[in-house]
Amino acid sequence: MTPPPVRVDRLVTSGTFSLDGGTWEVDNNVWLVGDDNEVYVIDAAHDADAIIEAVGGRRLLGILCTHGHDDHIDAAPEVADRTGAPILLHPDDEVLWRMRHPDRKPDGALADGDVLTVGGTELRVLHTPGHSPGAVCLHAPTLTTVFSGDTLFQGGPGATGRSYSSFPTIIESIRERLLSLPTETVVRTGHGDPTTIGDEAPHLEEWIARGH
Image (cartoon, rainbow, N blue to C red; front, side):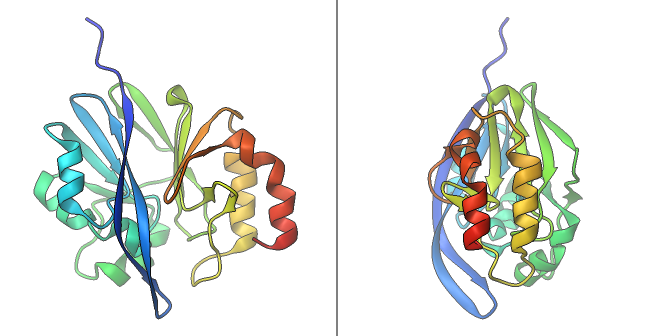
């Protein structure tokens, strides 16, 4: 019997992002990767009810945090408490996590090279610091996609003008970890529309020149 296919679903949720004394309205992409039986949530942003509805009757294997900025993790504890799923975050971003959730720790760590499996499909953890120290991307080779969080967007790298971020570091992460992926790889971002590695790779030197 053929197993159910693994699919990628996008849920867009709305809320705020706060850091360094400022607060901004944002729309976030919440990605769900799984089949009819089990699923991972990537970045539990803003709306626990909507996320749990999108999971449906499937077993939630975990809540994977691409980084610790509050707009990407604000709904994670509620989703975890209501489903029993663990929250996984790279330890280098626990300083950001604690700003939003001082009384609740993540349940486990994401580390470079980790491989998570859902429906027989692998998600490989790539540590891509720069937007934040513990930023990660999740590469699914058989789906020809990478979930980039706020490391790479359509048109350039993620923002690096706030605390705990570094422009040279994010450029190195993109060059070494992302632009080395196949050009047809779809980049599913933390905000906005997807792009591809092939569309973004030619612009690296431009980004460096303008410091963006």
